[in-house]
Amino acid sequence: MRFTSTRAQADIESAHAITQGISADGGLFVPKAFPVLTDDLIDRLCDMDYQGRAFEILRLYLTDFTDQEIRDSVAAAYTGKFENEQPAPLHPLRDGVFMLELWHGPTCAFKDMALQLLPQLLTRSAKKVADGKTMVILVATSGDTGKAALDGFADVPDTDIIVFYPQDGVSPMQKLQMTTQAGNNVAVCAIKGNFDDAQTGVKRIFADPAMHKLLDEHNMEFSSANSINFGRLVPQIVYYVSAYCDLLKNGTLQKGEGFNIVVPTGNFGNILAGFYAKQMGIPIRRFVCASNQNNVLTDFIQTGVYNRKRAFYTTTSPSMDILISSNLERLLYHLYDGDTSAVSALMQQLAETGRYEISDSARQRLQKLFFGGFCNDDQTAATIRKLFNNDGYLCDTHTAVAAKVFEDYRAQTGDMTPAVIVSTASPYKFAKSVLMAIDDDAKPQTEFEMTDRLAAVTKTTVPAALSDLKSRPVLHTACCDKTQMAAFIQQSLGL
Ligand SMILES: *Cc1c(COP(=O)(O)O)cnc(C)c1O
Image (cartoon, rainbow, N blue to C red; front, side, top):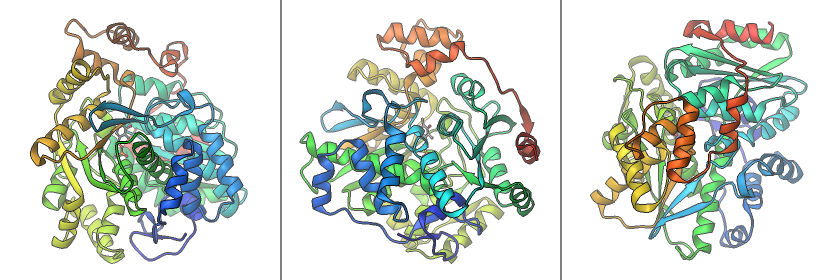
């Protein structure tokens, strides 16, 4: 398996793609061709547990890894880290509709699915292609990535991890998760700005030759744990394949029958992994891309015009408060049949004017596969309430956005194909919004009073990983201007 950049032809193996994170030309690494799952392999996957399925999918992409390396990585990532040893259970909601719950990991959001595995893949990749260097992981987070990356990388030898988050753009629980993170190789800093400012700052530092030189002089090298890293994407393909196997096993689908997926989307990583699963032969018919009020993707799918010049909203689903969806670049590469100069031109327009428009044929291909919809915070809250009262299902704000857009999708299209709604966070991560949605008597209290009340009202339990935070000391209080991110990095690495 070889990888190229979305912006210029390249020819590298997975270990390079994973250590580098982003290509020197600013593009993202994509597989040159997709491995196809044979009928026979799918039969075998159906009889395996999640770790077995992960091993089989990963080895198709990471062909420069030995089977033993992949087996060890998968075991280290998923053994004892997830509730019930089943990282991605399908919860039946109603006839032919399932919630794919991806939040049973250590930080209670779907980012764990990839970020428990990425440190394993990254350190093994670094041994292959960057020998002896300490990998410095830079992360810009809208909330969930930061904690999941900190948890995954804390005290991993030969790595340092530095996380930037928007000062006012994450939930109190998300903030506490990050500021209490222990580990001798971790640093956390708030940014006076929004997520896009943090992400743009990190991208700029990645592209800065002077910073690279400085790190190189200290035997260090930057890498990324953001979903631009291919090492984040490949573990996410696994749960779509796994969900298909589970739908075959529970009789919802016969082999080859299609299903739809509904994904609450921000940076487009999760839904793109579903698109990759389809390229491998998983019969996903339509991709319902659900956004909150930051509906840049809805407009893009409906019109073919991507325009980031618009108001930025802080919503109750903060992990989707994004106007620059990085992974969309990978989809463009495929919609344009691997035409790297076309993708470069679009990305250049985006950087210069904040806008681009895809060709008619690319738009037609996009619309055939993707449906875009969005909802506001009131609709999100109403959906949480409705799912709880009618289906007995308690979900978080992001998952509720997906459920609402799915409802709109069915109403508009009449498409009753079985569907998997991707459930991306524990409701307890966003306890205030969830509580306010279902409990008429709720009043704003401290975060932990509200999680306790949510547990009492819904007769569910607070995940231990969150209730434990109560007794953890805050270790990280730094806050900097978005222009000072490089200085913070130098200071925390002692350069
Ligand atoms: C990150 C995140 C998303 C968005 O996922 P992308 O891969 O960025 O599209 C949705 N929900 C939650 C809870 C998240 O943490």
